[in-house]
Amino acid sequence: FGVKSDDEVYGKGAKKEICADETFFEHLRSKVFAIAFLKQKLMQKLKDNSQDHLYFEIERPLSIVLAKMEIAGIKVDKETLETMGSRFKEKISDLESLIYQEAGETFNINSPKQLGTILFDKLGLPGAKKTKTGYSTAVGVLEKLRGNDIVDNVLLYRQFAKLKSTYIDGLVKVMDQDEKVHTRYTQTLTTTGRLSSVEPNLQNIPVRLEEGRKIRQAFIPSHQGWEIFSSDYSQIELRVLAHISKDENMQKAFKDDFDIHANTAMKIFGLSSPDEVTPNMRRQAKAVNFGIVYGISDFGLAQSIGCRRDQAKTFMETYFESFPGVKRYMTEIVELARNQGYVETLFKRRRYLEGIRSKNFNQRSFAERTAMNTPIQGSAADIIKVAMIKMQETLEKEELKARMLLQVHDELIFEAPEEEIPVLEKLVPSVMDSAVKLDVPLKVESGHGKTWFDTK
Image (cartoon, rainbow, N blue to C red):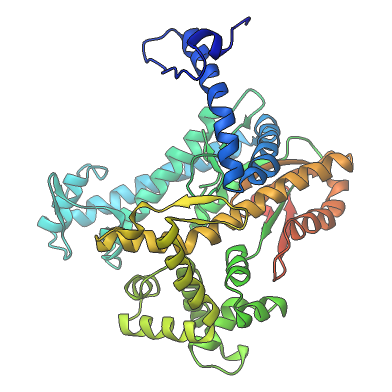
């Protein structure tokens, strides 16, 4: 643009503020000056924090990988989506009729005020919580009332209404002329370092509800004779926890390729053989494993697995006795956070914790839970970023036609010609497994099929 340097324009070391009423080009020019002015200081700060590797070796090269994924997009079968939309519309209509029948009158189900009046005034259901505008009908309130027909149907109605508006109608709106959807990945939205998919968000397609999972049937390869290929890290956050905490028992379970949830179930229920672990015991142990990662309380765990608080407390105490390294890590990381005001991932990604020294119990407790979880979740996020960079390099080096299309937290989605699938089945897990060296092995599970849904 033939623009002079900021020192020439404003004087050496001068600061230039960006004004809201500037024209577009003046605003752009000001931004250029601001970036140039800040670069040296920011780069020095990265070096001082030992974060220059994080920027130069991960975040910056990743931006190129993400750009290629965004440009490629992923094809969506419009006809499949529209068929699902029609089915959802019928389901929503049927649920409306049931809800009106159970309420004894018609009303606006989407109005919290009207719904609250029906549930708590007319039907007299327990657990009413008054707000300024009426009764609360938030998911948490209604979940406690499950088992009541009208409540169950309202929750189901909301699920189908969201599926239709967000993932059926929403995807159709953002398709390009080739029936492709191009999500955008942001590297700076989360505090943990996780990538965020926006406009549209393809990381949030529901998987717990069967009808939600089926939306993935609409995601297909962009060429005839190609397939969708998926690889995801198995229990990566727990493996990171085993590495960071250096807990010998947890590390042994992963090194022996033992089912970690069954292993935890054996310990908290005092069993001697994995054959004694029932599906419900494994489910509860899984909730304990992941609850511990997020710094859950005995009250939170009790609500999560549907048991008494004293039982949940016993489960947690037994867990920490079985995995003493995890308990030690949690105590030490909170103390470290309290002393320095922040925690870091394995790659030195830093998260500052303002409330860690707060006198307010709730603020302090939240900061402590965040201190426990951030090094785990953040390190897992960093690992998959490294894997994506190495994966793109490998695809180009091997001159494969396969393309990386999506990242959904611990999962990478590709499309590839059918003849390249056997190559990917060996290549992708190999690259992802070796992305980072931990004290326990990383494990990758893969699948492929005609749609994203078929990969699982």
